[in-house]
Image (cartoon, rainbow, N blue to C red):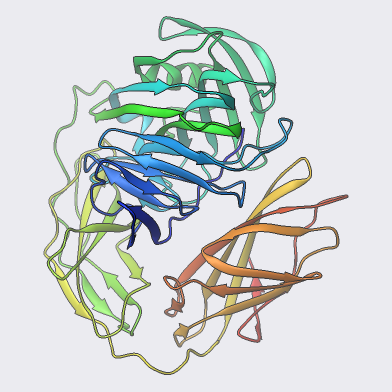
Length: 467
């Protein structure tokens, strides 16, 4: 079933009984790291991201992160088995909703993959759930939002639940026989492979499933693999479920060309402009490569600490937001090519943000509202772009929902509803928008009757255009 992971905000972690705040995708996780924050996340083995991702419920869910995986220690929610699950606690390699695992070579074009292997070990417990391994692909090297193709591998199914769509047959993939289900989740196509009996552990080729989906005409070799993920989708219960271990390796050099091991040239040092108390615009000289540069990963350092990836773009510019006033940051970039090779880091650009103060003007704005519906529920992703000439420091977006729609949970903004009137206020990390910059928030809601989207939005009292 559907689970939309979100652009990961600052994560509140309970570590050995002490409350600490870290950035999603931050430093390596230690054993016995308890995450209860709704979209809390951290890294393990300096390679993979573990996320709580309680996207479908406001009830408590906690996961205990170890050095090799995680387990569910608390699950207070319950969902009807004919609808969406509560959550998708998982570990992943690659990029998802703008958060890329450290040092990943994804996205990578399918034609350029020479091998893609993975291993997974599960511990099962009581409840209604599936043990799900996800493979995400898109026609573009997309690192944010929902990809157009989702491959689901159900290692275990407990309770009266089923994949999206309907069963369309069976297939032998990776030497095993699977039920095959096909469907559409509103914004993306889904092909699911369901094991007839539980599989506790397996070493396998991710390419076997990608190739089978390609043979069905759902993707082509020009598509990009963006992430692989493993975890659970619980509807009820699930305490004790665990991913004991997870690994994934994707190698470039495919396409019958004998393999390409040449990384792109090192990008030039970024330049900085439009420096405010909370943001800075970065530009850098492009890399060159024998098979073509597909994108750039942007990293940020502060106070001599470890570098954190904060962005992934296809061009040579990026606006870093959510910065602190009067603070020194270092920024550098790495280039990726179509074969999955990664360049050396560019020279670092050190930037000190301004002192801040005052409030931010509204100027012109544009809003893109993207829903994803199912049964009597939906999620909405709302992207705000500052199209004015001055920075916005602190924003409030107001609009009205159509009759019969009710918000149940939100992320990346404080969203309140009074009747049909909705007020969304920025979170601590996304309150500043430089000219041309954008930010997104989202929520889950219910609806009755026929679904429709809101059409008029105002930012800080100024009407916005819609995308």
